[in-house]
Length: 639
Image (cartoon, rainbow, N blue to C red; front, side):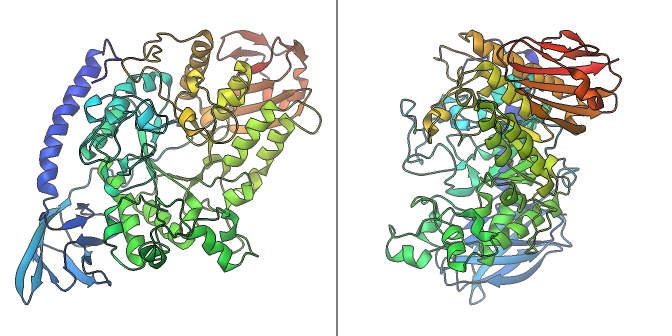
């Protein structure tokens, strides 16, 4: 167990010991709750009474079970509606009506010639109070993205596992390094102090692949946490403990593809389970790869062949493409997402490679989740610099082709790309801050622009400090823009201490480097402050101060946004709500400059002073404002 917390607080010790004891109890309960005959595999592993959707489809896998008959041996208020059979000899889809069901343990039997040949118990559990009304992440929150293998190694004993193919190798930037769920739990006090309120964690599900499995996007078991990260029960404990710190958990969900190590690749539940299945069956190396031409699914002039090349192609030979047009696959994926929300107590879903899955399925998937949890939130990844392309997928958008989505949020790649470019360009009349100003004006194409998630970086982008040319003032401007925007902000682990990377092309190993202090032997330790240089300390103080101010700022969380046409290397925005007004001044000028405030009277109103929320310095608003250096100034205005 990592010792980077040398002096845990008594409260922290109490929380960990309390949850540890609950974890042991949870493990004991789960064995009986999911008691299944060893010869059979049943998914979902359990369910709940009283769900909004009253039907449940069980996928039963077992040797040569196709010709068996399924009957309810013991059940109350449950109807076996039908049993669907495919061409697979080893799979059955059992449809249950739970509309009248109470929590119970039911028993289902498999029969041949009226003789019972197998049976299993199935747990229909009681929902947590208020589960349906859970609050998803919102503009009140700041999301902190973690690549778990690279964050904190809280339990070195699980770095390797006898059933997992890839072994830990911290010396290899593409290998598994040992970060885990226990490490995230140990970091919760730090994250709370930093001021974040939601954690988006890259996928934690089992990825039993030969290599490059640390990132988590090659699922080999949709209902199991990878044992090198922990267990299902440890994931539950993380969510519960995080809630005591006022932090919610957002799960990274992948419905487009899976890992080639999934057991389905040896026995498919149907002959249409993955795209290109017959071609793959003849030659496992002969696959059609995605064209990645994402606009083909919304382009009014695209041809079907181009759309299919995009949506049905595989990401990689190790990432088979799931066929969501198979109705059983669609149901499986929808139920799996809902199961994790209910089981773990999640506050959101980040959906990977959003537009790559079948678009009609995405409508059904997002609607099913939001019907089940009306106040929940889903953010989709549509990696495009075009706001028209991104806006197509957001709930509430009226599209010309009639397409409807129910995902409330999308990642704001257009604004992110423009932010990076605008800050690093030389200012002139037609370039620089004006690009950022004009991109924000494109909010007219979104159904609800304030629900977009804006970020300064993620696990696929180069590090913000490096992109800002190691200029601490440009970095602060980028961070401030994200954190004071009319968006839901997201920051990437390590950005608060200016972790670096190359700036050209993909650099996954460097971008997803180990968080300093996450391993006992680290010479730099963010948690204790050991070894941090002056710029790291300055950045950490800036981010922490701004995040904690934001927690109580209605102006940032829900206030009106105004912005003024950039001039002379200065871009000004304001946020206003009730009695709180903020003036955010972005300045690229390296030399001292006097800023005439008369232009901004519509934002300043009758306020006479402004206090910098970072430095605490007070400024008079009745005279020109002296900006001594390049950087960002965030003023809270008052009379």
